[in-house]
Structures are given as structure tokens and as C-alpha cells.
Image (cartoon, rainbow over all chains, first blue to last red; front, side):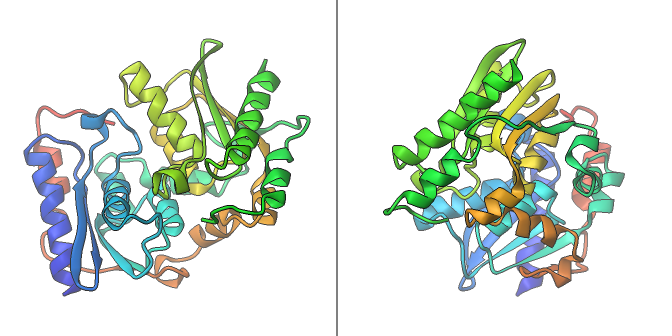
Amino acid sequence: MHTQFLQLAIDLAAENVKTAKGGPYGAVIVKNNTIIATSGNCVTMNLDPTAHAEIMAIRLACEKLGDFQLTDSILYTSCEPCPMCLGAIYWARLERVFFACTRHDAADAGFDDSFIYDEIAHLPQERKIPMQHLVVDNADRPFQLWAQQDVKTLY
Amino acid sequence: MHTQFLQLAIDLAAENVKTAKGGPYGAVIVKNNTIIATSGNCVTMNLDPTAHAEIMAIRLACEKLGDFQLTDSILYTSCEPCPMCLGAIYWARLERVFFACTRHDAADAGFDDSFIYDEIAHLPQERKIPMQHLVVDNADRPFQLWAQQDVKTLY
């Protein structure tokens, strides 16, 4: 069963290239053995650098289920998720993930997945895209307001 | 100048909580000293676990500029980007990032940013959300098709 859903993700990825929709990636989200959402990579078509296949499928599945979490759902993806998609998988609280190719296959094909994994391990200020912690007044005010809020939706 | 834009990101984060729109986060994207896009966190409002302030601002900025990359743009965010947003920053090719609070402040406020950073360092199969590499037929076919494609938009 897992192999079949993963094969579908690979087919979506191949189709995405053949139809010139975008990058060679596809993703499928399944709940109770039923497909909830599928997507190819839509970065260049949508002019959206976040429109990876996994992110698109997560968004579509949430829209379909009317929820911002995907507990009990499984993600099948043609390639190991990049750090952006990995983060999204945690925020969506997916149950588990199956992937076919690895970050190294993606790197061989010219994609930055492996490079970004390496960058994360560096201190923010030492990354290729410098990330600087500035000390400013009232930086923690939003968190204080959040703590004081009685009625709020946790996520 | 950097402090002013960062202060705006903090104000957006505070406003986001006060108006009950979502989590205590705000982001601002600036190009040539001009604000291109701003957003608060919209996860619960949009039912989209990927709708962090930084991701939303990146999407809006790309839409505004009609491009899937934000070279020469700077991101100001009320808190250190989580791994999902960090990945998006790399895919968008932003020039640099300034942040006010840290992943540890976010953890103290009850958010998973620091936990996800820790998870990334583990082997996929040893993560709290298990990620399994399955060997299936034709896994590399999408990448082969991509390599053979003469006309394609790299991203």
C-alpha cells in the first residue's frame, strides 16, 4: 500500500516535468487509506518559492479537511522533504512520511535541499544568508500579550 | 533603519494577537528601503499550518514583484525564523534577515520552533515524526526527465 501511494507521488513528479508545470517533485497525502490531496511542485507556475509539492499538498489537505492540522495523515513524497517542507510537516502534525529519492539525489539534480540542511547547522550570523539577532525595545511584547490572552487558538 | 523595520514587525505581531488574527508573530519585507509586503501569522485564521508571518510575507512580496525570487530584499521578523521559514528564505534567495526574539523565546511561549530545529539533526527514521526512505521502482525518473528537458525554468 505504501509503495503504491509513493509510486503515485513519483508519477505526479514525472508528469509535472512533462507538462512543464514545474520542478520534478510530487506529493500525496493519505488519511485512512484515502487520498486527501495531491500536488506537483508549483514554484515557477505560481511565482511562489514556497509552492513545493509537499507544502501545496498540505495546504490542499487542510482546506479539504477544514483543519490546520493533519494528525493521522501520511505524506508520500517523491523526494526527501527539504527543511522548509520538513518544518511544515511538523507544524501540520502529520503522522509519518515516506519518501523515494534523497536530499543527495536532489543535490545531484541541481537543487539546494542538501545545502539548506547544511546551512541550518550553522549559527544564524554565519550562514550564507546572514541572519542577525537585533536587540530592540519591546521585542517580547507579542509573546507577553499572547500569554495574557484568555481565549486563543493554539496551533 | 533596520531597527525601525524590525519594530514594525513587532508591532504587527502584537496587533495580530490583539485582533485575535493568529499567533504572536509579524514579518516585513523591504527592498531598496521600501516596504514590499507585511504580514502577521495567519495559521488558525486561514486554516493553513504553513501560514507563518514570514511565509505569508514572502508570498505577498513575490506576488507584488511578479517573481519567485526576492534577491536584494531584506526580511525583518519579530522572532527567529523556524526551520520551515528558514527554508523558504533560502528558496526565495533573500539577501539577509533581521530578527528580534529567538527560537528559545518562542519555546518559552509554547511554540515548537526549537523542537523542530532539534529534530532536523536526527536521522529521518529516528525523528518523532518517522520519515522512511522506501526503495521503489523508477524513483529517479522525475530527475532524469528534468535533466533531459531542454526548456525549463530553474528555481
